[in-house]
Length: 500
Ligand code: C2O
Ligand code: CU
Ligand code: CU
Image (cartoon, rainbow, N blue to C red; front, top):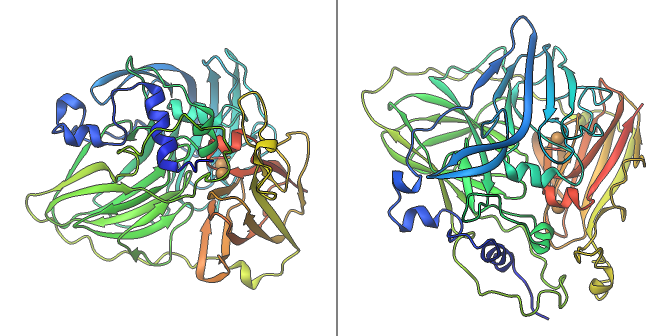
């Protein structure tokens, strides 16, 4: 029985795709980079669609599109023909109307990830199914006290989510802060990954890649390969970074610059916190304040150890094992920041943000444990027996069950606080995401968390656990929670919650 590491699986996928790429960003560096290979273009911002007088009314079409990815023409799927789709810019209290059209060949729908809005009817309803050629009119009403921050949208039709994100369907949502920090400029940085074959088409994805969670060979920022941004020394920028990769974790560093964490997923921190690196699980966002210093800096994504399927694959992959290849386990350069010229005037201090709600001071109505597992791990020996389906897929479960849209897994009461202990009895990390209601992490791996930490995607480490509290405020209705390694979600690692 050969253990199969993440690196081997990913290398296997790259070989299977038959692409010229060696994986990761190695291609651009080792060959000298530059325009001809697609690196080094000026960073572009996605088109911005802003609300006016409290309303944002937009049409989004998910459809095949031909775009440039690096130096190549690529056949992708995109919202309104661009990768990423337009940035939706709104304010607390706004109404957002989206006429969504499905120009794809598979069913789809739209999810506004992280927004605290109703999950019912034509709100942020993950059970909507838009057939090819059909349209659906969504309406999202943001409460007056909606936290500012960086959110995003993507399709959410069970069974197609990872494929549709990997194909290029995602875009950012900015909820403006009524009391913004003084910055010279903001940048939205949507990080995604994609694997193209030799003719620029989306590569096939193998069953092991799905089980591991696919990682695209090319990592993009706003659809670009290693773009370049420029600034003057002494400027302060706000970077809104979205991890829109279906499965890839991003451990970000920006050498030579002073970086402070301004917000994470939702809201903002009372005080920005200086840091040297920050890790985003799939679905996470961070808002970073960058106080620029002269020089050239690189935003890098270092690989993150997120477990493996060692011992879980049985003899399935025997004889199909390539050697360890270079590429996906190397740090990837995402963008360069060129800081030069005359020094800008001092940006002034960042005013303190509002203090954060702390659910540890509030009564808890109910406690639950949710266990995330991969087929048959409990028994260890029975791996082959638990392989499922024609593709030889393992099962991905929560509390021993695969997703069933008809079944309600958790029944909660609107207006109450619950404590959920999320356990992981598998050898891989699972980033857990709950729709509509954000989570406050109160214990991480048995350790208490000091300051209130709010997120809408919380990583549950392999064989580890995390405890969160959730205030089921404002909305009733039925929605979902799931692993945001979207291949796992599509394979069944999703449950339903109904609030009444
Ligand atoms: Cu980002 Cu349920 O999704
Ligand atoms: Cu979501
Ligand atoms: Cu998972």
